[in-house]
Amino acid sequence: MWNTIKTFVFLALLTVLFVFVGNLIGGKTGATIALILAGLMNFIAYFYSDKIVLAMSGARPVSPSEDPELHAIVEEVARRAGIPKPKVYIIPSETPNAFATGRNPENGVVAVTEGIRRLLSREELAGVIAHEIAHIKNRDILISTIAATIVGAISYLAQMAQWSLFFGGFGHRDEEEGWNPLSIIGLVIAIIIIPIAATLIQLAISRSREYLADETGAKIIRNPVALAKALEKLDAWNRAYPMNVNPAQAQMFIVNPLSGKSLINLFSTHPPIEERVARLYRMSGAF
Image 1: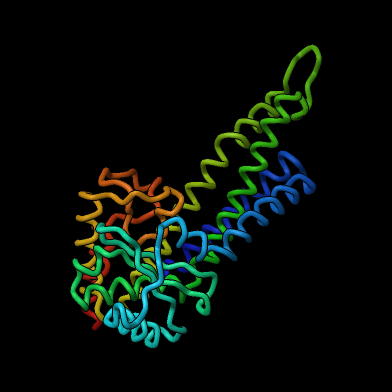
Image 2 (image 1 turned 90 degrees about the vertical axis):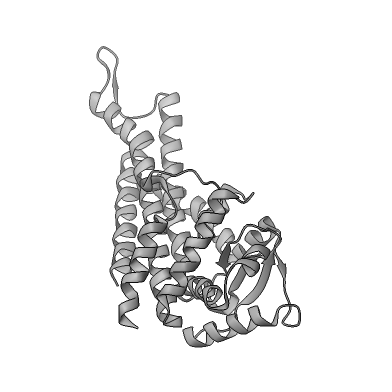
């Protein structure tokens, strides 16, 4: 519940930032244009997210006859979650990882790497599948698209401010005194500070949805420890053998696939594994 509340608070903050920058830079007209442009781009990404992400990762569909155990796990977890069984894909990578995509539960996809099938036990794999199906059940693709649209609109407005400065049209300039100091302050805020703040909020939303997917997935299979153990194994492998993926796609995986180097938490798409694992172990007392 707390992670859901945080998500809506963060989205509200993004909306406030967008309204502030819109009024500061382009007024209602400029803000509307920026929102429409960002919305169109993200709508396309949202509607075709499954095809785009699967193509980028090189994933291919896997049939029930090819991997009956994986299909049985996905079907059972989806039944417990109360959603249709997602399509099942395999990613040609020895580094163990997984992600989910699809704009709604009816178009859900779960993709796992070849490496994860060799590393995890059946219970641990079920924990990973439950986490991914939780993303589908919680409509996290839609939420991330909304956040990306607002952040994209703020970025467009910041670019409008830069062009306005270039052509001397921002604020009011006095021929003798030069730029109005308040205009300069507003310009700095609009171009530099607010886009960074918006990106940090977007990343915080991503982290809160990961926590929620852990919690929801653990409740679906009623086994938080299995998911905790899976996360520990996946994190260790991905630190040692990072995957070759597009950075824009990295946030979709259950653990960060890019590098073993630690990142400042504020700039990370994923929460610290240690905290995720600790939360899951604390949940285990309820089952």
